[in-house]
Image 1 (cartoon, one colour):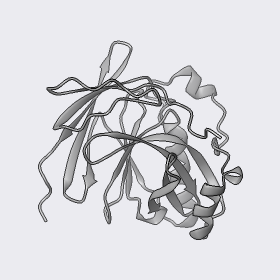
Image 2: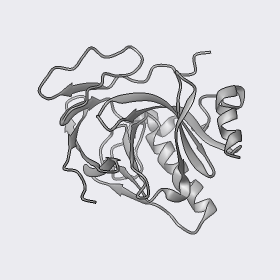
Image 3: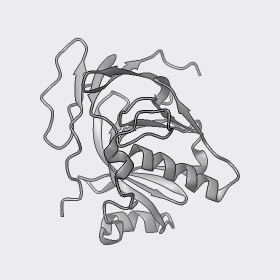
Image 4: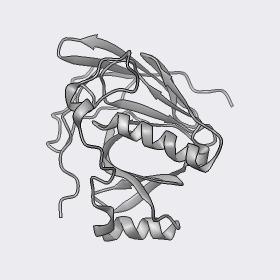
Amino acid sequence: MDRFRPLRRIQVDPEPAPAAPPPPAAAAANGGAGEDVSAAPAAGLLMASRVRRRSAVYRDCKGDYIGVPNDPCLTKILSKQGDNKVLFADKVLKFTQSGKMKRRILVITDFALYLVDPDADILKRRIALAAVDKLCISKLSDNFFAIIVPTEYDCLMASTRKKEIVDIIIKAIKSNSEYQPQVASSNRFEYHAAAEVIKEVEFEEAEGGVKTRITHKAKAKS
């Protein structure tokens, strides 16, 4: 069963060398000091002051878009962790330390976030919701969001259901504690792609969508 249908194409134009042809599944990828990502409009935004796409406003939010109960690999991963309440599951793009984009399945439960490699059926990362400090998004209609995890390293992803993902994470954390993570809305933010690797993401309105630039910053001092 093909659980991972292709995502909306995201074109990457690296500097200075031209990018390789994008794979048909989702997007092109190139690791470098900086790259421009021209993304299609996102699936909706959080605040009334932002530009909302009509499709995002009227899209049904059903949570599990993968069919986790019918997937032996995902159910096994969750059962090993003692998780059984799935709040959200869908395909996403995850940005690596080098700037490449990897296809992942994001599963959100009431206790953690799971990133699973859909090709190898391997759990790549588990993030406890209690470890999430902040979520970073832009003020424009893009697909990108960053999950800030100070005790580990951060995670930059792209999804056409960004608004739903952010809302679910906030509600899940609030339901288990008195804490509510900050949602930082800015057209420029930094995140730790690894413990000592900082990247800056900049968003700019462009014809037909939003232009996104990811720049490698200096290493964080220990």
